[in-house]
Length: 228
Ligand SMILES: [Zn+2]
Image 1 (spheres, rainbow, N blue to C red):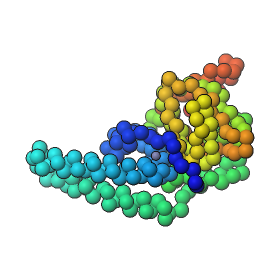
Image 2: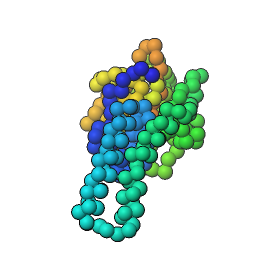
Image 3: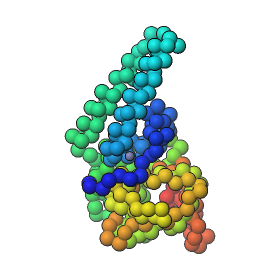
Image 4: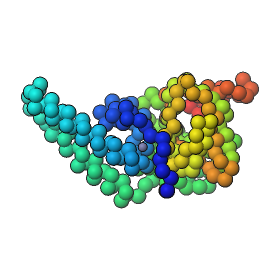
């Protein structure tokens, strides 16, 4: 895995991730990205330390002196140590794998438990999806795209997060490899595709369906359901 990760969640998302204010499914995509990205592992540690320092400062200024608060503070200031050991574990532990189209792909540990309960793969042309059942509003799935295959041009009715887990994907805005996180909103229209010689596995988190721009109208609804 020599690919240098270029597309990251952004500082605000990482801060919300550390604060625990993201919805569980968005947090899942961020967490899986962090598993694959040394840069964001470091940022994650730094933000955790910063937030602990802010809380310490608030405590020193005497805004809250209840015992409960002290217990929470103790817990939070212990986080850096915990975070460091988690990273060590990530490197040591074997990751989970999924098999599709006769190929087995390794996936980040953050997805291992969900992938155990994945729905069966649904195929449409060179594309396959398998839902990962979660309790949240967002729709989470594994998305496999065979080599030389295009996802029809679409925009987004909500937030689309795509984390590349294996291979490479290209759209009008760039080329994305393992660990890269694409974040698209209703302002974005794109036509993701694989290269001629390499297939691709992604994690897809959608807050609303995709909206396909081309093709026969009667085909658009099934297509929308396939991806959502
Ligand atoms: Zn990153």
